[in-house]
Image (cartoon, rainbow, N blue to C red):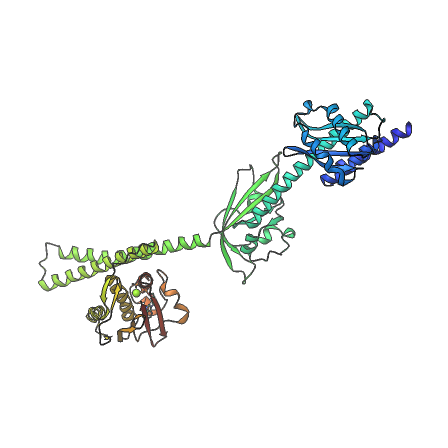
Amino acid sequence: MDEYFVRQRDYLLEISRALTSQLSLNDVLRVTLRSATKMLGGKAGLVALVNGDAFRIRASYGIDPAMLDTFSPLLQEIPLTDPEGFDSPEVGRKMRLVAQTARIGIYEVIALPMKHGTELIGVVFIFRPQGNLFTSNDIRLLQSFADQAAIAVQNARLYEQVATEKRRLNALLLHSADGIMILNPDRSVESVNIALADILGLGPSCQFDKMHHDTLIRWAQREPGPELADAMAEGWPTTEQSVLYVEGELRRFCNHGETLSVGMTYAPLLDERGDLRNIIVNVRDITKFKEAERAKSTFISVISHELKTPVAIIRGYAETLSRDDVQWENGILRSGLDVIMDETEKLADLIEDLLDVSRAEAGRLKLQIADVNLCHLVEQVARRFQTQTHMHDVVVDLPPEPAVIRADERRLDRVLSNLVSNALKYSPNGGTVTLGVQPLEDGVNLYVSDEGVGIAPDQIDLIFDPFYRVDNSSTRETEGVGLGLHIVRHIVNAHGGRIAIDSELGEGTTFTIWLP
Ligand code: ATP
Ligand code: MG
């Protein structure tokens, strides 16, 4: 009898070891079921767990796996009640019948519930040879085993839940478009996602877990305010809500320390005691936002300057001419009014251009399509500009027959005017400006060529950007906002056309526009 108790104690030890080990749930159940069966002098054992709407076998001992299906109908029958409603003797009796028909040489069965709180989560069966009845001591032992196993099941489920949550969180971090980094309280790195590796200019294979925030995050320039190390030295964070925001130019680890505009948010994660557990860092590339901000301020400064100049001239002339203590000669009056008219026209043009740009950018540039005689239009524009210059010859190169296309005449006038105005402005030494029309099989080419300063090859793509002006003496000496070509491109695109540029520095430039 003593030996029986020693053995029992050994099995109990084995069970508790299995329960506290880090085995998978299946292994825990297998090991503990084997020990429990042996401990009770049984031949075989089964553990069935609630899975969905019925009990299913999760572990077996001493039963040929091929026979396990025999138990399914009975398992289906066991009602899913609370543990109080579990009828142990009845389930045991039924199992005994099943075991008999299955001829597995087992005839005494005990069935005990596994419970978690008020929830029935499974049943443990132990089988013994006939006549070897279960004592109340056996039942008590087995029930304590069932209770322990239930805890193991519950732990495994919680563990599984946590693991799923963790996988979900990892996927979220990994694939987030924003850069994300998790830091330990000493600012060493716990993990870094792909987006942040990209932002920093480091490969995803980099060993981030051996790195430190302060070596990864190197500011080339920073908006006023503390950065992480400063803030922490001053006692940050005090609460979980005290989020720290730092914005500036971050030095990257590639392209010779090229920089990137970022906004970084540091959110502290505190434990129950209020101690810092982790810092969650979100890094957002705000280059586009910064560019838009810069474009907006260029826009405002350029436009306000361009608007102020004509307005000042108009006001000056109007004030002078309206003085009633002076009697103006007719000639002076006339030329003063001409200046006012010219400047008013410039203002109207500028406003029209701005409206066109904003319409085009919103995709709402509506063309007024009609038949346009291009030769006619080109001649008109040439005549208009010839009257404005004595230094240049404005000539036309037209085909013998009229070239008529479907287009928006006022907009094409704008295109030609912008190109000719550029040709004149950027030919400070005069020369010939030619406006030409060349009918083609699939459309027509319109061209404007000059003998001016030319455009460097690396500037060609840039001159179509809004407010872009090449930095050279001829742009410094002429008026302009840098909108002309931007509008030209919008109008040509709206017509389904294309622009080509042929230019040589110091020799001249030809803009050719193909229209369908
Ligand atoms: P705006 O036309 O708005 O009054 P702008 O003439 O400076 O101002 P764009 O017409 O868009 O602006 O031209 C952009 C830049 O391209 C010019 O500043 C100039 O440097 C360059 N450019 C345009 N046309 C020529 C040309 N024919 N020859 C040389 N440079 C040119
Ligand atoms: Mg221009």
